[in-house]
Each structure stands twice: as structure tokens, then as C-alpha cells.
Image (cartoon, rainbow, N blue to C red; front, top):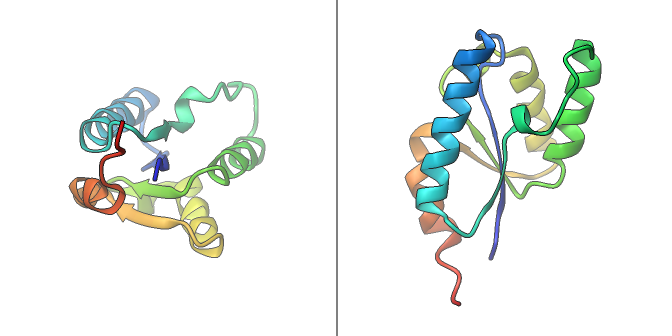
Length: 113
């Protein structure tokens, strides 16, 4: 199975710290599940002029394409991440925490070439 993994975290952090947190997780997921498609919400081209609600709606629409959502440390402090958490559960996504990233490879295995 080739999973699509959406990553999210404490979006109330300064953008440079949040960007670094997401990139670190993206790198780690790529190492554990190299065949996965990874969605980093800071890389989907959300215009900086958009308000909170517009940003959230695009993130939720994008997250809908994912099979799995990984919540990074401190996500409970992020207003958008909290909404994403509820949405992920309502949409029956597989949910992992950042300390479970290594388990993704157990869940999704290696795709045969």
C-alpha cells in the first residue's frame, strides 16, 4: 500500500520553527516509508494574505487526500492542528504521533518493485 501522509504540528509557532519541525518530520517519514507521498501544509502554496479560516479550509481539503495524519509534538497548541485532529478522526484517517513515526514502516511496509 502506498500511503499519503499529511503532517501537522504546532502552527502557532513562529513560521521558521514550524517549518523546521515539519521538514524534520518529513525527512524522518521519508526514511521510514520511502514510497509514501508526504503532504507538508507549508508546501501547498497557501497565500500569506489569506486569513485563518481560508488557510484552514485549504489545509482540510488537502488533508482529505491523505490516508494517514502525523501529529507532531506540541500540536495541541496549534489552532489549525486541533481542527485537523478532529477532522482526521471524523474522516477515519490513520493517526500517528511524532514518536510513532518509526511504526509507520510497520504499518505500511515496503512496496515491492
